[in-house]
Image (cartoon, rainbow, N blue to C red; front, side, top):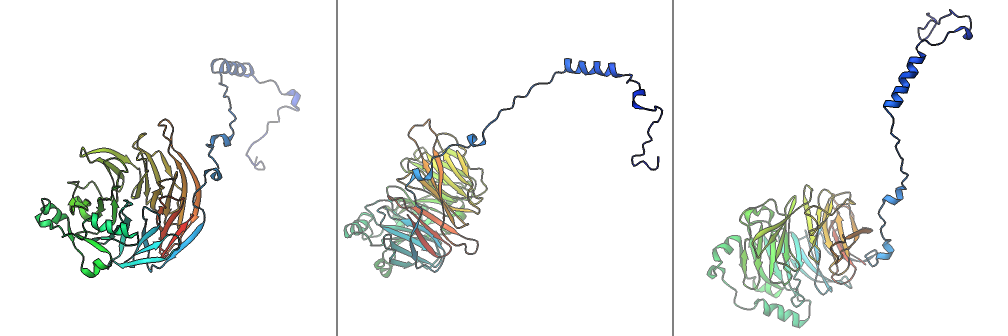
Length: 421
């Protein structure tokens, strides 16, 4: 027994195998087995053979979705700091940019030549052209100030109309005598620039109590909104240029405001906080919808020219497409970036949208919105552009499409602006 590895002692009672008798419980075990087969029958599982390729949705080839930007055409060099924001004028001929080097520059799109430059005396966080084609005007957010500048790069008729239509040469309205005096004075202070600043193109200066991080225009070009995340109840302010008036549309703060946009055709105001996008009806003065992103921190937002779809970028690398007619939750959530998304943008003419990230890349998507409400939008990734180098963990900071051509402008922490066509 000690020599057996399993501790088993064989039975040597039978001299050979033919002398071993039958198993005594053989009949009983067979009977129990028959009962199991009869009373507990097994179900036959039908195996379905599915081709894995058939589960992948069939998307059109990117070659069939041309045109979209693919190639670097022009690099605009001149800034000595991170280029925070760029904006293309409605005609598509001029490009404005702002940087941490406290400068605002206007470039000629076709040649890459810098035509004008202003020193804002503070790091500039946002710049945007007036969307009205008959007006040549820039809104610049420089820390606690907002500057309205006439670059004077358009035609002589446009420059003169800009100054005349907005009353820049008329006697400046004294806010202390207006009906909105107390409220406007508390919210911000309108002032006339000095003569030297006026000769350089400055038209109106506005002073705020908190840092202004973003400025956006209404489509008609008379109203514009500013965002001051640290402003609490006055984080979002709406200003009327023609009357030099400021209004606070909200009594209470619903969170840390990140971005504000006007609806392209309806009296709606989109307000993006850290996790939600609230849509307010300005006529009825009520909340119309509340979009739930499911993200931790919203970084950017844009509205489709049709007005029924919203694009939201987040710092946790998500790109959310909302179909407002379908649901308050994202229709599609795309995760193509490795780092935080800094900006998202729709094209105003072509079915294109884009996102840029701290990984230095810009992703171009084909996004077709159909007039048939029964058909969902078609979203196809078509191109990934390696646009900017990563500097101090920051990559591509802003992107914006050309208003009429399938081109995209990008700016980054590497102090450059690039045009891809």
